[in-house]
Length: 239
Image (tube, rainbow, N blue to C red):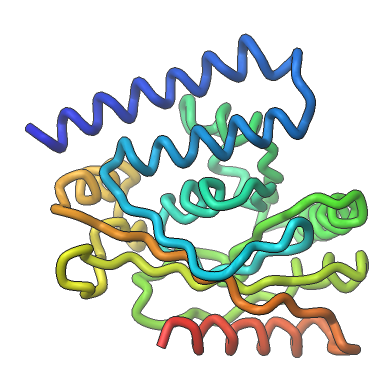
C-alpha cells in the first residue's frame, strides 16, 4: 500500500510539473525556470521516499561527468544543482516524461548517428561558452553500479572546445539503514521503467549520494586521455 501511495503522489507531482511549465515558463526568465526545476526535483526525491546526500560543492557552470545507474540520476543531480542533460532521443517520446525533460532544457542526441553526435558536441560547447552547466553520462548507458563501464570521450570534446571546467560526480544508491549498496533503482538490461520505479518505491529506505569531485581543466589532454582520467576520479570516489 505504501508503494502505491507513493506512486500516486509521484504521478500527481509529474502533473504538477506539467502544469507549472504550461502556465508559468513562458512568462519567466531562464534563471527562474532553473529554480523551479531544481525545487521540483528536490520535492520528487522526497515524494519517492529517498534521502539525498551531497558531498562537495557543484561548480556554477561547466560540464558534469557522472556514472550512470538509474533514471533517478537525473532527478538527484537536478535536485542538487540545475543543469542541462544530454540524453538519448528515445526519452523525448516517453509520455509526459518526454515533455517534462524537453522543457527542462535537456539536449537530445541520436546516438546511432555520428552526424547528430557531432551536432550535439557543438551545441554543448556553445552552451558551455554561454555559462551553462551541462551534464553527461559518458558510459553511454546505465549499469548496476558494481563497476564503471568504459567512458566514451565524444562529449569531453565540448569542454575542450569551450575551454570549460569539468567536474566528476560519483553516484551511489545505498540502503539507508545498513549502508549496503541498493540495486532497487537500477535500470539495466531487460528492466522496464515501471519495474525500476516499482522496486524503488517498495524499498524500505534508499539514500542517493552525489559526491562532487575536484573540478578539472584540460591541461593539454586530448578527449580520450581526459575521459580516462575522469573515469579514474569517479572510480576513486566510489571505492
